[in-house]
Length: 454
Image (cartoon, rainbow, N blue to C red; front, side, top):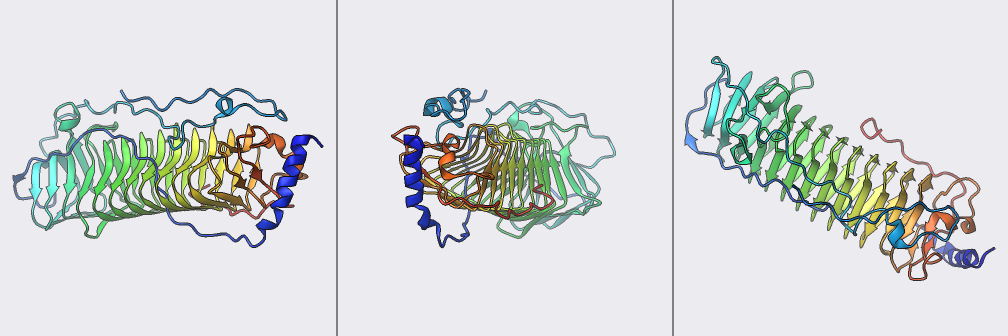
């Protein structure tokens, strides 16, 4: 046994008894780094009228180059092996100019009812085809209801962000689509492009807003809610700049999808219960800060940047899948748990914990460049399966010991044989150790993700 391996063996045996009595603890919610957004302000023109009846972006932080490492070696220096950029930054993709910001729409047909810079002051119902130019505003005392199958088309008449049309709700919004006949908010062009209209804005609307079986596409912000409450079921946001933005709001979102957006979801100072939702093919998946985030059965996949990026947030992530992103989950100054989830195939770190008291348990961490990167010893990992990660299963970039006891590392693995799969004080005396003993003797029973998270 080498000197380094002997030192590791003594340390892990000394902490082995500490694992007795560990249980799976429930956490609460996280919040990701809130990035800048397009500065397009909704400025509706208030023209009182009656409603017809029936009608270059800054570059992301510099990342140290990744160099190949021979397995079994003492490992590279931290500068050579950094799997993610600076702590808390994630690997977010630069904002791009939205392709629809200057795209004009053809004139509405003569038979269409066009609502232009309209103020709705009494309860109103829309059905069929509705065309909107400029802004429609729902006053605080009014409710706007959309029946199943309603299609609302927003027509841009001048280029640029300031001229984007939209819907501003200060009263109440009720969207009653169905599975067979969803409601649709879209642009007046045949194939919507992100930025052709602003989006649905809820402003200080603390009434019971409801969006059911609705498709929103081609907006700057599909849903932009501030100081509001909302329940969504079966809603989808596609080809938008940001799919859903929440500020100081309380939202329940179940059984929906956010895809093909620059940012899937942005949360700031909000509470969200997110269940069985798919975030797929967005440049960045979900960003949160100062929020409470409860996610069950959520799948975040195929992001160009970071899947989930949260800071100063309480979170509970359970039964989820985060895969195929540049970085999987990046948590900074967060509290909570990641339970019974799959973090797989991310091109840099599967999970990155910094100053975060996060419990990782019952999960599978596999096929990432680095399985778990930690900056300190605040978090803890137990009852997980670590396998098939490219450079390291766990990379300790801090000076504190990190406890990763009672995990599965593969058949026949012994504590002293894990040296090449861990980066810690054996590789750099300035780093804390990764405490792994005792090892599980069999693969832990891992939860099977539901149909959305598969």
